[in-house]
Image (cartoon, rainbow, N blue to C red; front, side, top):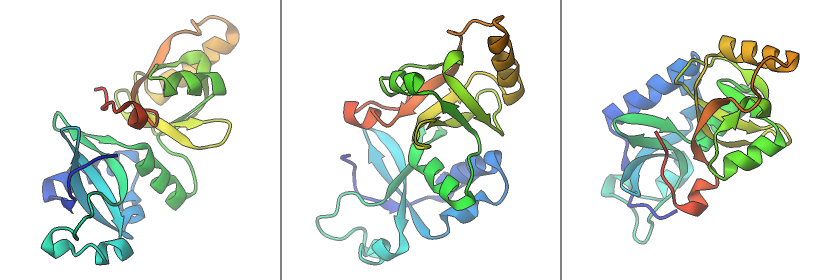
Length: 198
């Protein structure tokens, strides 16, 4: 990934990140305590970055950035159209910290393949729903075969509506091709040099 030099995350940026974490559950900000939070630019968007404290010591952050370093850290998300869009790696940090999935949808293999090519998630691809999920909330897309986060989607339905749709699907009374999650960002995006779709 080619990005501009890292700088410290502003108070406004930190507020947007914390608001996102609060919507997922209480106490999740603690998952980021071991990192220095930075910002950079990527394809014209503000990129939120987590740099381990050990790495940050070697970057001479108070003087800008060390010579030659262009980018360091884990991508936490993007700020575009004044909206924070989480990255798959932010969800991975959270899940490792709390040892469970939250605000996620587990997707079957065929749905994962389609999602990684930029397609939306169809009802028939949903294996499991992990609350909280509200309509128009960003959620993690988890590969059911290996438990990895493969992207971020925008929920078109809340968790109760999704459960109802899944029940109707099992009964045969719901369209299996109904789009339930909009692809915002998938890990294949970085190969294709695309930007989050909002």
